[in-house]
Image 1 (tube, rainbow, N blue to C red):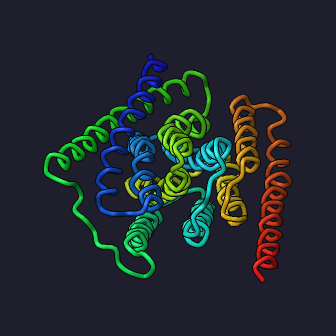
Image 2: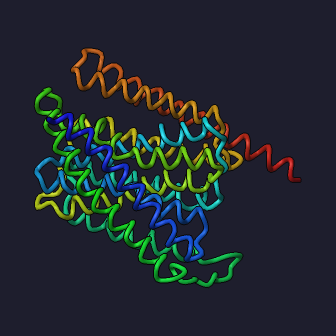
Length: 355
């Protein structure tokens, strides 16, 4: 029965997200917003709605480890696997706005969450701070989206005609209903499987739930890459990560009477990995504002390595500690340093060529 709930929850979540994205994107596009801003806000937040529903539901249901694992696991999944696979399909051009604003903000928020978690808890006040930061981030995005060469772009009506407007609103409402229902089924199935198998809820949240709730992001970014909508493909990933940290984690912590408990395993490995992959985005994006296929391949291989770690953790393998130390102490720092060196050499080369 738990497996049926889990599978049914996945299907309903994806269908709900599809309806939500379709209705929201049409309304946002009618407002004259650039595709990057739509990807960073409407599409990203729509595809992250499953994470919000699952994390808030698990927090209120007394399973905070699933809430935290879902957010951290989804962000790692988004950057390493979704962005990696999208770049493997087609090299992704990165907007200058992402390099100058959105990725640095994502790095800062990731480090802030790591700092908040050092006392093994993210309290209600800290959750409220994250929520306030989301409001500021959205305001900045809207202001930047309405500017073109320093001039304000007039906002057109949200839809052309009452029939179109009503149809899009209906899609959004239907999508939200399906998301809530799918989140409940997925949470029930995942929790049941975790308890029956003796696997910790943190590992289930980092793997099954995180991957399941990230399926809308995966489908959206891969499809956008195939269609040449690269701003939406990249913006969806970065915007979803921002929404996960500021809205999903923030709201979950703010609604919990005792905040969200941070397990020692998450603080020792998963949260640092989340911060490291966000940091790795900057030199990759900075280099010619392009994510090449080989860089997408590196990201994908890193997710495979991370999934192997989770498998070792779930089985309690004796090599777990050595594997964790190798990843944190050598592999991740070396990768970030390598990408930074490549970006610096590219910057120097471009600067010399422009003289």
